[in-house]
Image 1 (cartoon, rainbow, N blue to C red):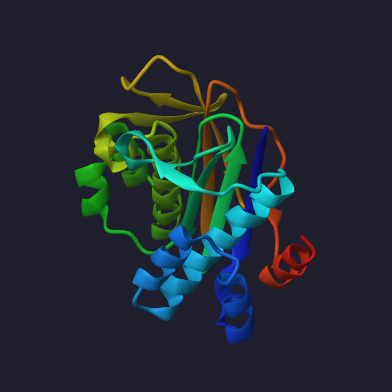
Image 2: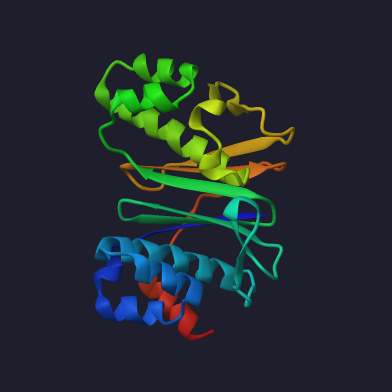
Length: 228
């Protein structure tokens, strides 16, 4: 089982909607939101928390207490459901699964090739360098980035795993990862859910299904949660 959800946080500029959803968050999420300085970051943190709350509600999970396991990976204390969250620009992305899962969203912007040279595997850097124009380079850079980060997150290592310790191989027959972390099989799925963004999911042991992310509005979520 894998389900993914996306939403745009622009809605949360509405202070009444923000407050009503904030009130439903766990103390863990409220503390994260409160630590944010800028309103945009507060909206992103709340948006990610709301998507998770909504996804778990749909799965019938009422106990949302979060604990940290190895490498400070957050997990639900009393549920087998695994989750992962990501945000960038004004988009938030949530994945829930009965298996280990990692997800990432990145807004496509102009890139600095020195970053790719420093942090990416040499094969990835060469592929980006071979692009004929800046738009193609930006697109491929963030394609690699989201795939790589989703893999780092599903392993549970996060940025303890260096970006150049493994290689994403974009073959014609699918996406593969050359890695020495473990002997598990990893599967990737990419989405073009919103123009100007890249979305990727990585699962361990079982390939993700072909369903696209569910795009939801925070106003709709608030309406659903009021009935729960």
